[in-house]
Length: 166
Image (cartoon, rainbow, N blue to C red; front, side):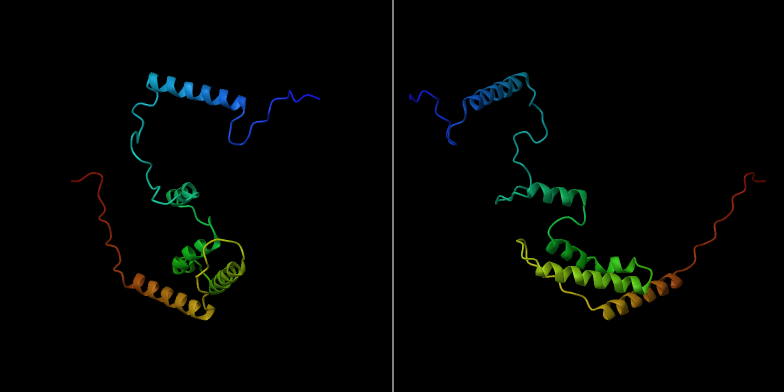
């Protein structure tokens, strides 16, 4: 038996087809540069913004979440922190006391569940909330808003303009 079969490429050396593809791609890029296809592009010659000093493999998704103001995306620790910061506004949007109680109970359940997860990611430092104190605070905010609305002066009546003046 003779060993005339070509040696398989090692991971360090590209396969023969890969070399040809790389040469073709490089040629296409050089031709596009000569034609001026890359001239006057926005950001030409400038570093990519928001890369920072360290390499973060998820930089693009974090930027997309921030730019698009997407909610509910990301690890539970981060989404719970955001929800904790916006808790009063979300509770104030609810109309009934029972809905507020359910919302607080659901929030607490998700915090406890996130603490129990053994997956990687940032630690969950969001505290749970006391149902009764949150309901009392919700009631007080509603009373304050109603008092502020009733204390506001009524709008001045608009003067009627006549179509034809005499």
